Image (tube, rainbow, N blue to C red; front, side):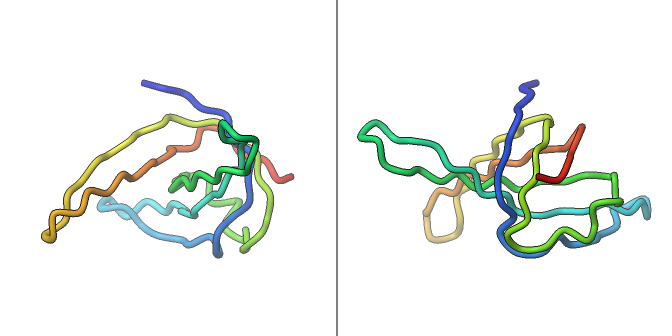
Length: 96
């Protein structure tokens, strides 16, 4: 298990969902900026999930700070294109 600490801006609004057992959770995409080797900005987008639904009113552009378990999944679609999903299962979250 890998635990990460992130700060970034939401890409779109937070969505409320239910898992297969009927438990509510939220999900959103988070964009984080860092510097690349030449000093330019590099953006990484994470798919974030939390059973703490008290943050369900997060909106596009809101800043959050969070820690969570990192899970990276690589998939290949029917056209042979490879995709990488970077998921974070949130342990703690706070607004910026």
